[in-house]
Structure formats: structure tokens, C-alpha cells
Length: 364
Image (cartoon, rainbow, N blue to C red; front, side, top):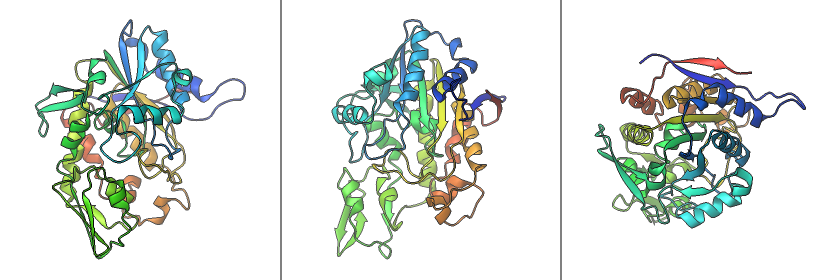
């Protein structure tokens, strides 16, 4: 597979002549979105609506821009995401849509409706045969698989890139459990302070507190990893790096299931790059300055280009990344050493989902 094209615009605008929505529209048009036949086609625009309390999610205005372009090309767009495994405001369709409305994603602001991909309780799914190295039949939300065209609109945060947006994000609740099944954490009790935050965040009641120390009941744990990110003293970790490698490879295979055999187009905005994903009900200071907007038909090349661009940025003083040890030239590995994010791109390329080699086309 040869080099793919990734199109890029910075975030500079001229007063009275341009704005970021117009720049995004020009970018996706220049990248060739018009080559897709949208005429009377149902078009799923997969994005993350943000957990209420987190203010780093993509503004609804960006979704409106994409929706308007799809409508101009004759398509029937809808915004979508699937339900989550963990405690929060997006674990069933009613709460999920309510959270999206609270964060501004109403039909009046975006120009289209929201359909939660895997239905009311996260059980509406289609089995997509892929015969992967780890996944035989991916469990993808029904509404997403019923769409004729898939567009991803991603808030890029390293391992929270396009592949995770469409891979993990489009999996039903059962699909998410399958992807996480090899990734069950353990607690270093010498570090644990008994704060119980892990217990409070878990929807499965897997963390147990005994003598003011936590341990994880693996019979109940589904491996979602929320306890790892919520722990204030980094006492909770995966049992081995290999678990995250397998998780990332499963995400790549699920992403393949979502985009195979139908048109797809991918948009990634590298702004507000806070250290944790938008699933958290809080956001921290960004770890690097805002970079810009990237689009491509190739989700692998897109993630690689975004990661390369972020790794060229300086670290923001006082951020999470500024306070952790810097042992590599990779901002994402330094911020979250356990993620092994590159394994997802490596497996996706091997699986034929795209190429990590790309040419960057700058659009003014």
C-alpha cells in the first residue's frame, strides 16, 4: 500500500473574511468528500458528545458544518455514538441523548438528529464477520451498520484517535466487553490510599475495599479501564503491557468492521488535547497547544499524521505532561506509558485498513 493523502488546515483566521467552520468546510471539500455518492444515502457521523462536566469535547458547531456539507451533497445525516460500559451519563440511550443535548448537540444547533447506535440499553447490534486475529464477528451498533456512509468526526487525543472513535466507539456494549476482555487491571496495595474512587466509577461493582485497600474482582470486571485513569495515585495498572496491545489490536479490527464495504471519510480536530479522553466528567489543562484540523479517506494515515503533529508541539507549562517524567520523544507514551497506542496503528495497517505512510497536503 502506498502513501495516503492527509489534508491539513491550521486554526488561523482573518477577521470578516473567514472562520473555523468555513475553513473546515473548505478542507473537507478540498480533500474530496464530494467523490462519495451521498444522494439519498443515510450517513452516520460518528463522534463523542462528551461526558457532562467535561468541557473539552468538540463544539456542536463543527458537527453542524459536516452535517451541512452532507445535506448539500444530498445525504441524510445523523449524529451517533454507542452506549458506554462505565458509570456516567451515557450508558443508556435516554441518558446519552440527554447528555448530548446538555452539551449543545440538539437538532436546532447541529441540523440533524441523534441516533444512539446500539439502542436503548446497548443491546441493538449487528454481527459483522471479519475473521480477524482476535475478533471473529464484531458486534457493531445497529444504526451505524444500517447507514450507507460513515463519517468520523474525532477529537484527537493520541490513543483517543479516529480508530478508537470508530472501533471502540461503534461497538455495542457486548462489543466493548469483547474488546476489553483481556485487559483486567490489578491494584498495587502499597500505593492504594483507599479513596474508593475506583469503586465509585465502576458500573460492575468490581473494585472491593478491604482494610482501606482496593482490589479488583476479575469475575465482575469487564476491563473498561476507567479505574486506571481515575486513580489519583496510579495504584491501578494493567497486569501486563501485552493486555493493552491486544486491546488496541481488537480496536483496529472493530474499526475495520465499521468501515469495510461502504464509503467512509474521516475528520480529526487536534484541539484541547487534555490528557484524558472525553469520557471523563472533567477535563484538565491541555498538554500541548492546539494544532489544527486534519481529514483523510484513510483513518490510519490520519491518526499517524495527527500523532506526529502533536509530538512536534512543545509541552504546555503546568500541564499533566509537564509534571510527569519524560522518558521518550512521544508525548502520549510519556503521559500514559501503559497505552502502547502505536500497536493499534500497526495492526490496522497489517489488517489492510490503511497506511501509516502519508503525504500532508496543506489547505490555506
